[in-house]
Amino acid sequence: MTNTPDDPTAALPGRPPIVDRDTWQAARDELLIREKAHTREGDAIAAARRRLPMVEFDGTTEIVGPDGPIPFIDLFQGREELLVYKHMWHDGAPHQGQCEGCTTMAWHLRDAVYLNARGVSFAILTTGRWDEVAPFVEFMGYTQPWYSVRDVPEPVGGAMGYITSYLREGDRTFLTYATNARGNEPATGSFGLLDMTPYGRGEAWQDNPEGWPKGNHPCWYWRTDVNGNGDWGPSSRPAPQWTRPGATPETTLGRQGDH
Image 1 (spheres, rainbow, N blue to C red):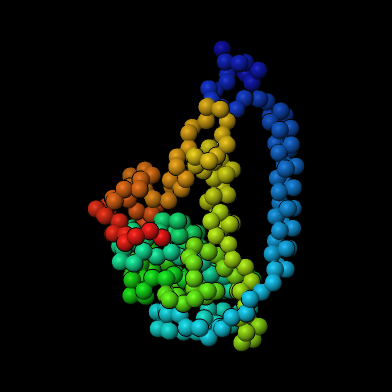
Image 2 (image 1 turned 90 degrees about the horizontal axis):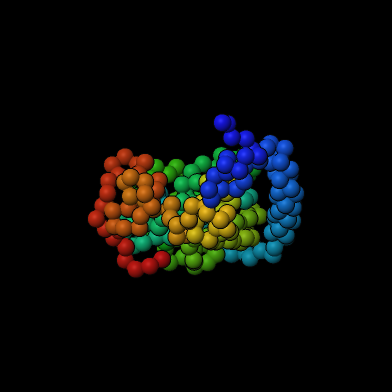
């Protein structure tokens, strides 16, 4: 006997109900009303963001890159707008011991061609010493410009883990916006895509249907073992590192203190 949508034996344990396409479409259309309201509210917040006051700072502040010290204003590359991601750093740690959350962000920001097309430059800043940062950048295969802002005060340096936006007017530079934590999610496309899947991100905080697979602790996918299993042990690495040539399980994360 073939199960039909009206046959209760067709139901899958711990899953939403099985329905015909018209019933599914009606439920989808109802959710779409909320999704459109969410989009419009996001547009309104973005409009308010563009109207935030600005903080002027010294654009000649020096940071360190592959060619030595340069003034911060050079990061604009002649453009008027600049976005940076501020990457946390563990001094003295090997590649596998560096911040897995920041690796998630940096890996998603490997190409700024569409930002550049809109007149926006992009760079990654970190508090690591350049002699440690340079081999990490090479190992990861990053093509975006990286710079050390060690001992540089805000708004150029300061707290890491932020996406920060700047504006240039001639020789004057301004801080316009900064966000961190889940405020960074628009730059991490995988999160939005996972939110569209049946199981979502698989995090413990999710509101799931009754009987849905249980989530793991927050950010379980940041760091895995060699087999791809979520793992925070000494033989784990930030997930993208397993794609890099020569990446092998290690015996220690080599961290010296917390973030």
